Amino acid sequence: MPRIIGAVFFLVGLWAIIDPGAFTKKPPVWFSIVLVAVGIFSIVKSQTKIISLDKESKKMLVTEKSLIDKNIEEHAFEEIKSVELQRVYNKKGQHSDYLKFILENGETIPKIAGYSVTKIMGMQMENQSITGNRIAEFLGVPFEEKRPPSAGEVLSSIQATVQNSIEKENKDDKKE
Image (cartoon, rainbow, N blue to C red; front, top):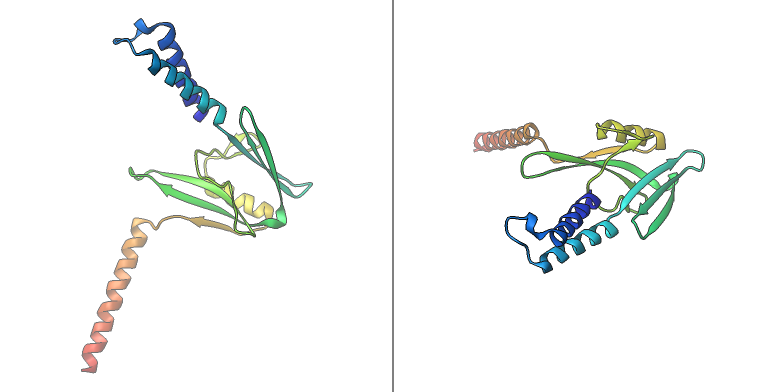
C-alpha cells in the first residue's frame, strides 16, 4: 500500500514538473520536487513482510523485503507460544484484525500492526479468526482472540455489578 501511495506522489509531482499548465493554478516548482521526493522515499522505504511456516524444517521464516534491503529471521516451531488475533476498532466503529505469533521470549511477530493480508498458498483468507485457529492447530499451540468487549458484554457486566451492589446493600440493611 505505501508503494502505491508513493507512486501516486511521484507521478503527480512529475506531472506537475513536466506540464504545470495542466493544473488550474500553476504549482511552484519546489512543491513538485517535494512530491517527487516523497514519492521516491515512500517507494524505496516501504516493506513487505512475508511469514512462511515450513512443515519439513519445522521453522517459521520471517522475510522483510524492500527495494534496497532483504532480511530473513528464522524461528523454530518450539519457540512459538501461541497465535493471537487482535481486533482493533477505529473511530467509525469498523474493525481490523491482525494475526500475530507470540514467542516464548514475549516477542511478537509481526512486531508492528499495519495493513495486513493473510494468504495461504496464494489465496486470500477473509476470516482471520478461522485462519488463526487453523494455524494454531497446525503448530500445536493455543489460539487467543484479543478484542475489546462488545456492547452486549459491557451492558451485561454493568448489570451484574449493579445487581451485586443492590444485593450487598440489601444484606447490609438486614443486618441492621
